[in-house]
Length: 358
Image (cartoon, rainbow, N blue to C red):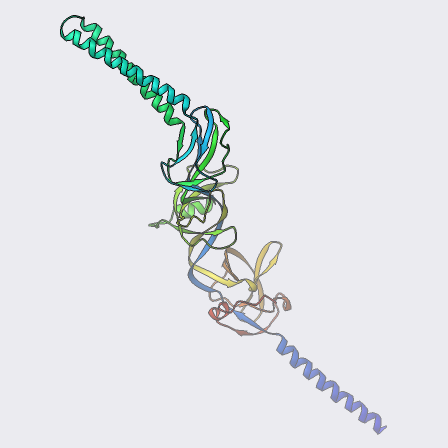
């Protein structure tokens, strides 16, 4: 009998010690980490997909019909203003110009003879006038032929880069045939579409400076030179609700080319923004929530509205800087749970944001 009592007592002692240990462990496990929103003046980058265009990008076309005698450039070559690019066979136009020059000489001699006769009152003044008109007509024909001859030479209208050559020497080209395109890449125009609400925010800012923007290239590297928004188009696109902006970027090293794509990053200031860590939030049916800790240390669900997203952070509406929010252990609690927590200053929390919500 005594052995049974001793055994029961030992079991009770072990059971009591186990319960105490379990209770202590539970207390440690439920001690969670909390913080508060941080209200600061900050700024975020808003991203826009963009199209990159040369400030001048033109087609070079033949102005006369004929055989392409010579091409003086290659694809991708940089050329200077006035440089000879193509030569269309000029013999025919050269011969016509020589003919026109001979007719000018003949008309000039005829005019001088008529003038001497007119000065001696041998011929009437009308005959001298007709001779003068004939000379003027011959000079006009010569000028026209000079223009036609000049049209056989295609020269660069500005400094730029030659694109793909559409014809090769020996090809018969018609008047107006495309030879190549020429791009001036010294500066680039970058077009991006801005939603109506963001356009209104931009347009109603008082005393704003011309905004500078950054360009992220297709390889995710940042273009080293900032751009400036200089132009907003007149009309919104009724289908998308966007309006095109145009930023100008310097391109001194020629890295950007016509037709590239990228991402414009526009800096948007946020005054008095309420900032919280992203990992302090959870989502239900596409809405975001946080757990707010009340004065009785109970957790209460509160819906928030995300106004802007930054790396590991949200700028939100629906919280005050004095609120305490659960930072970790969101999956361990439910509505109205009473918890124990350690409070950590928001600036400290946000400087160490490299953990995910639990």
